[in-house]
Length: 333
Ligand code: NDP
Image (cartoon, rainbow, N blue to C red):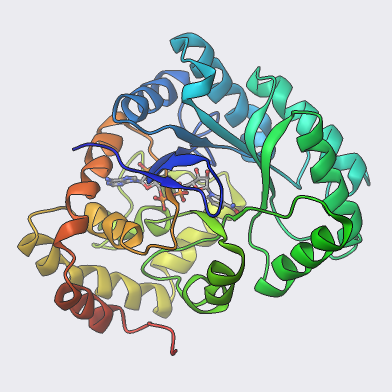
């Protein structure tokens, strides 16, 4: 399958429709060996975009990806690298949030860990309502002016907050956020499909969506309610993963979702693909998605997941309606 590339929103930058992120996996759940082979499998499949954040594995995810980029000697201009700023490493009052101080110090520290002169994309990893929007917009513009990043964006900001950033940037004659990084998958649709709808039209907002498999749940690997060895939910020393795992496997809501995954199996079978490929293809088929950030602990997962591209043309309106009927969560217009 040939990789496809999409413009990141209303910009000249092209990102592969599937990309790879480090989150809880690289620098934590798996070591450099697995991280490197996943990144190599991704790169060989035409994936050009690799996502990271200062907070991932306490900085070790950036370090691991940085070592991989160096190890393989990839040409910098062939890669689109991101990081996200909000939660810095320390406990100090200025190690967190979107003050000008933390945005700039956080970015510099990330670049050092990645062993890069610049990232292509820099995100505000969350909104910070205690810092004036003008300070945030000016700080990210300074980062771009300095050449530390080419584009800036947001992650998990409300439509109102994104619009506010645009208003401030316009007033000051500065660069507005280009892209948002929201969760989007078969189980999590409301914000992306409804709340952001006006932003796609008005600003040409680009999107780099996360957890397309809902942490692996949509691959069907947890359908029996047990946790396979080596899988993400077997990683118990991460509070955030523990919470996601409990929500997915132990609550009534989670169990109802597992039933939906089971109900999707015949559709995957009919389309001759795996559940993971179906779930990823479903994300890709939304034209407002610029790139789907996948995660992988093994290179075989990357190889399986990139084949989702071949499934996209099979998602007829009839199939999409069948999927909607099973999911039963399509946001009302
Ligand atoms: P997914 O929901 O796709 O989960 C990925 C995990 O699912 C893998 O690490 C692997 O875990 C498992 N998996 C992947 N493919 C398969 C397969 N074919 N069969 C079975 N299991 C599979 O994405 P993530 O939650 O990892 O999110 C992707 C990226 O998005 C992150 O790395 C990060 O860059 C970004 N992100 C951003 C956030 C934000 O706030 N901006 C928040 C969260 C993520 P395992 O093998 O261990 O079970």
